Length: 76
Image (cartoon, rainbow, N blue to C red; front, top):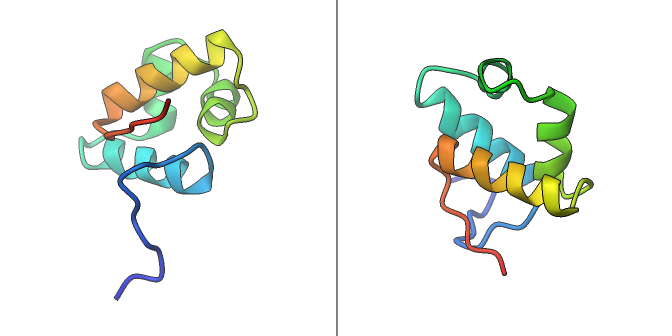
């Protein structure tokens, strides 16, 4: 049994970051590698997923990362 409960509605935070990382790993890459290929600074990607960069650019980056990682995310 997992110590983490998976919610269908994932908000920004550590759990979302873990899910995104897992999504990329299941595709054979890492979040860091995705950032390099997409010319995104890793700290910006991390902050957008954690919710500390929540302005328009951070939200757009978060949507892009979620899409490419294959993580389903319904927020709004």
